[in-house]
Length: 258
Image 1 (cartoon, rainbow, N blue to C red):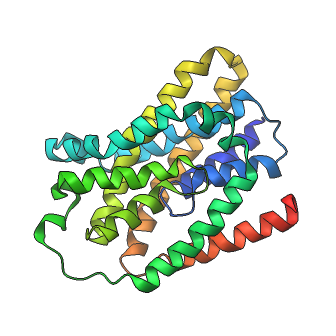
Image 2: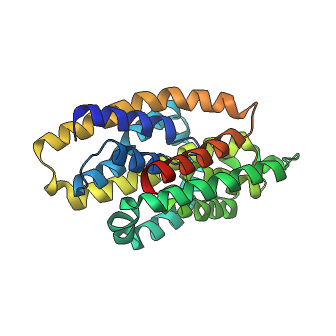
Image 3: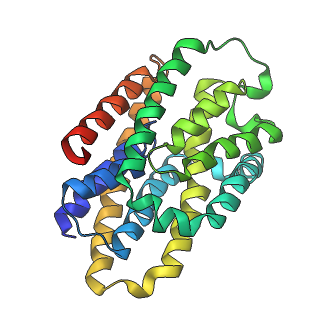
């Protein structure tokens, strides 16, 4: 992998991590298009580059991470994904992260579901307890974590799973979107730390520099996208993202996999 490859992948990670389009899926497909050789470092890079996006969330929402009520809800929501992710880690890294077909199918199905959901779901006035992410009931926080765990399948989109799950549970759109941002920190932080601890001995000195370039690029890009996305959801639905997922899946299937 070259520094230019790392920059391209960093841009994709930062731009897609918090959108309902699956950043991991984009990284897998982009790696194939860039003809980056399959290796243990590449799969670790796809996981570890998320540290850049984590940094953007921490910088943007650092005050929220000083709120005990928020931290407790994040912990409850993180538990299901932690257990499922740890249990399925060999399958995720050894099989799913190497399967472009899995990504394409997940992108297409997820796009269809996202469009149908937005057409059928009507947000109504909710109770005060769901108005902000700091007051989400613990039961709902746990269920959001279960929705998030579906995203261990690359192409599903962690943010889409948590946001749609939260909306189904009656949480206001702005609240669940920001909660999804915050939940990315323990989720991606744990996944990245675990993978690096298991595989850092396989990295060459040059690999570390490449990884840092990717993280830095993802950090800068995510800082910009976070603000743009928040402004977007206040005015529009996620239907454009669903259409984009379907077009991307069909295009990649017929041009690359077919």
